Image (cartoon, rainbow, N blue to C red; front, side):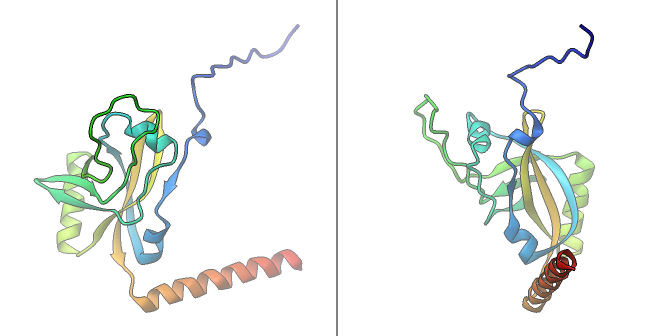
Length: 164
């Protein structure tokens, strides 16, 4: 019998199997200037909790403390199947892992240009949680209305293209 041998390893998950948590409100409230991928320092079973989809980025933001970048206001609920009964803080500052040059660049942009650092997405890469952060400029109310109108026009053009 000839053919290609395919091995199956049930322990290895595909990238499509893991959840991707998105902060859609950030795309509505901010104009994203630049995106950077960062690692995040987690404790205990927080990665398992994120894998079950229990990670909220909605009202979170990033800020510098003592020259290091932290994710503030994010909520990772406790993992239900955790056997340890220690006190767990769901909303706490979480350190973000970036290269020194990237940290300097972000800090400079934040101070000089008045930009905000906003978390956009959280996802897994090779079993590690990564956070996509963006340098963002706040939108005014009329900018938000313009982007909504532009999106609606684009959607209507796609609909009419399918019918014709």
